[in-house]
Amino acid sequence: MKLFDEANTVQNKQVKANKAAEKKVPAGLWVACPKCGYEIFHQDLGPLQECPKCFYGFRIKAKKRLSWLVDEFVPWDEDLVTDDPLAFPEYAEKLAKAQKSTELNDSVLTGLAQIADQKFALGIMDPYFIMGSLGKVTGEKLTRLFERATKEKLPVVVFTASGGARMQEGIHALMQMAKVSNAVAKHSEAGLLYIAVLTDPTTGGVTASFGMQGDLILAEPHALVGFAGKRVIEQTMHQRIPANLQSAETVLKNGFIDAIVKRQDQKQTLAQLLRFHQKEGEANGK
Amino acid sequence: MANSKTPAQVVAAARSQAKITTPELIEHLFDDFFELHGDRQGADDPAIVGGLARFCGRPLTVVATDKGKTPKQRVAKHFGSPEPAGYRKLLRLAKQAEKFGRPLVTFVNTAGAYPGRSAEEQGQGEAIARCLLELGRLKVPMITFIFGEGGSGGALAMACGDRVYMLEDSMYSVLSPEGFASILWKDSQRADEAAKVMQLTPNALLEHGAIEGVIAEDENDHLSTIEAIRTVLKRDLELLTKKDPTALLAERYERFRKF
Image (cartoon, rainbow over all chains, first blue to last red; front, side, top):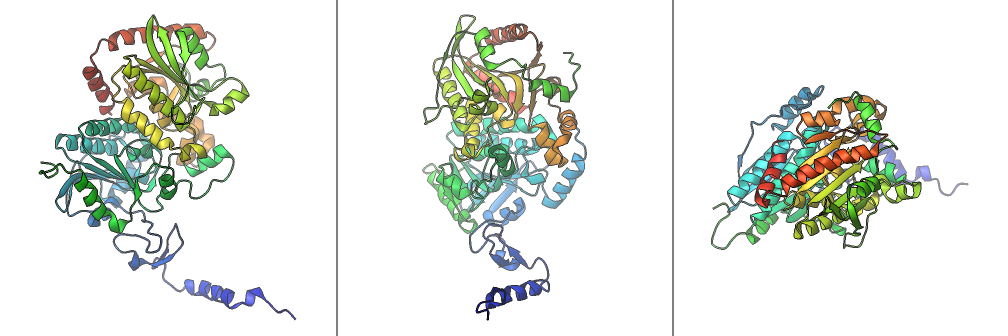
């Protein structure tokens, strides 16, 4: 007689039952956290779109992030549109689709923001705009953001989310890395504060330029932060790489990030950090 | 400049084994080369060769990527793809050049920054980002020659100065044609087609205003290529060393601002 039949244990029976039940639950009501696997009822994600268990911040559109991050916001440079410098096949259609879905002219939202009494220049990249890729208009908006902040003596906060330079714009996309970096350098020379907040995913040309140029560099829990793509690294190494090689927690441990901040704490943390750098007796931007 | 090669042929020529090498360039262009090692933070990347040299009697700082010659060298140098320590060596030597008022000349032939595990752990993104941040404001002239592959951010970190020239058989692009084809068409075999769409040849880049000039190259006569580089370098050094740092930096800012 068989004393132990694994397939008939209570646990496994339940797994089977769950599988059948799963089909009856309408799709989209439950989402699994891509980082810890925790099953979340979609309403529990809330406006922050944050996993209640591991605090991973789901990829969200720039306008959605804006809705809970600041008290006041005036957008800048909303009318710039790329001139498609390589006359790249099917790029115009791709752009139109991205513009429609994100309600942005390109992959970054910029403007003058305020949290409590702290005024600052804010940029938020949108991972849903052609993978948050860095194109001409992205670079132009960020450059103008830093230039205007330098002129008006404002600190800058940029939330990054990007697959890297936008290949449909070829060398023009690559040049944005240098263009934005030069504007960051001038802003820095003026003694002004720049805070970069790295969100999922921050990779390639954005990590290798303004993503890593902040005076203070924050990241969201479990955000992917790296330079090369995972597949490229594995092809180079001819071996599998650990899943957490490019997690914000590993990058923090390696010394490239100042702190990891949960979404629910970000507004307060930014206000606190901006206040540290406020010149005595004057409000920012005055 | 007339170059009858197709973009795919330019890519092949840029990667050719017969291509002029870093040691050749250094030996024939400069006198008194003295190599300087290390990033002063715990590492010395052999993919980046840098040091002091004299050019037409004038002292300057030279930094170059080096693919290596023997199989052993090529493996140690990651086929010319710098690690973060390589970019930190570049930045150290650049700041030293600034301190002593020496122009900086860089030579680039790299498929890109090394995409390995160690490079990620040591902050490849941060290393390149810091080069872009600081070299853009370097108060001495910086002139770059791309003589083979100019791969993405890894090449840009060495080409973010006042002038960039390319040899006729070289390329400069946001990613490799293979990577481009595999992302866009899910087929890395279509690299030749990608090379055409990407506009990565020297002539195309000159038209886009990304470089200042194209230098004639004869695969079978490296010395004539070196003479052509010498002429350009001599002319530009004379011009750029006369500018005061404020004007130099303003023009450099504009060089990238226009994109």
